[in-house]
Image 1 (spheres, helix red, strand yellow):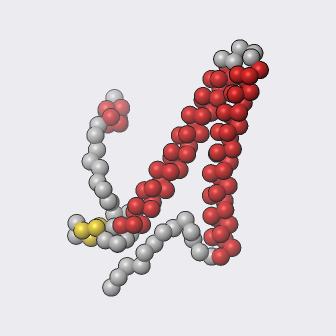
Image 2: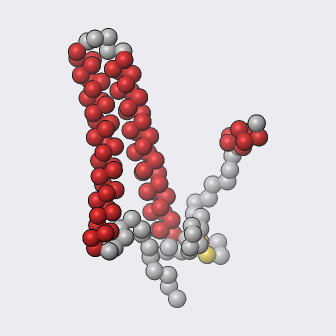
Image 3: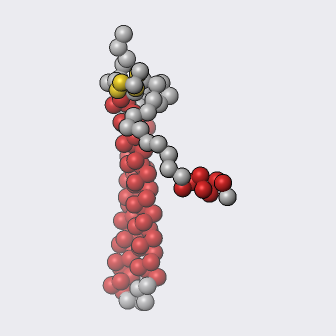
Length: 119
């Protein structure tokens, strides 16, 4: 019961937090390395949003297909929705593999955004 209530309890949200390196905020002041945190946050949101959109489209397409009632036009629309959802998911996966290919081919990790720290 406590874990259930903990799930719905509000937690503080900060504009920037120090990631593993702790370079986003130094002595309470945002640094230029804050763009690294921003990049990671945006990337997490985009990946999560892509998964959520795929799931929603998949549910809508499945519901359309179940409620088509044998009508070929409605079934075709549902199939189109399901196909679009799968194409979107495959597109996200392929784009990730392209980034990994670039990393392996050139040796540059394009999935990590780092700004060198100043002296």
